Image (tube, rainbow over all chains, first blue to last red; front, side):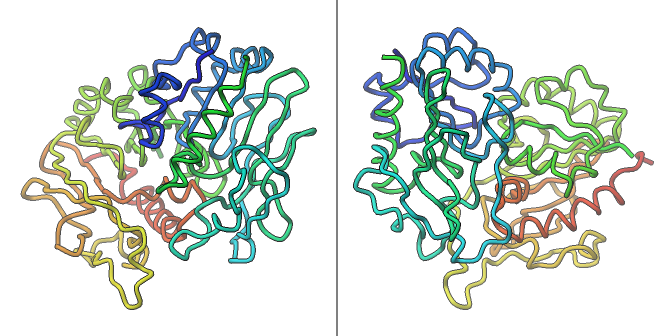
Length: 198
Length: 205
């Protein structure tokens, strides 16, 4: 089944996905043109931090059905709408200092396989680009990466009791990261999403 | 009091418009797709925030122009390609150097161009300095409030293109404040929004 990249911002989709789009592994759809039928025909879903969350709530029923069929949704950004029962609103760090931005691998995950999480802490010597808070871990979810001394779940995967999986990255688009890392993440995210509803 | 904010619905818009910190500055929120069903003349100010997808605004182009021509005020912040749906805007994008401040003693070059303007009773140069996305070549007669290092306008008020008023900037404070990133953008909104309420939220003369 198809993997959809929901393209929410104005301008071209993230360049890191160009090869997947060209190879037909990823279908790009403008969020404003999305319909419930598109979700019904998809096995995987990738959304960006530009997602129109108010608009996407109109598809809550279609999203539930997508997940119940075993669909996989890779979510980037701050959750601020209750798309699915069990999700909670993003919690930002309170005036984080450098120590609050330390990243720790908590559980292995194919998207992060072989990647030293601490190497993602800084971009040109500045911390905080990866994430500055967390989307609350749903009951039964698996924390993948923690942030700060409390190791708050900045990344997690949740196998829903009703079927399907959601991966949450509480930051800018992981697959749009600049440089080689972005290409690696984009490839792994597509691969992860492709396993949905097979 | 009547300020209408266009609400495109991304997480940074939701944080900026709905969280208690600034929610009181927006009397009504409207989805871009619902603008057509709103009487804009009931509002003194229409605000279009950073990163509003231009293709969600283009259908409202004529409505916005009519609103301006009847004396309305539109505030449009950066990264929305405002030239595609507002009149008289000539924008030149520039590569963004997010890292300029890592060089000791570096100066992004942003300068306040009208220090006696009431906005700058609430904002300092430091509060309008984070990074640059581009500049404008505005029509003659506009009031330029801030410029980049080359003296090109990045924030100005246009009362010449229409019978109304446009406050145009390439700065993107809602995106960064709403992403919980870049304290300067929060400081910018802490000065800009009270100015908008106090000085812009009134009926045209």
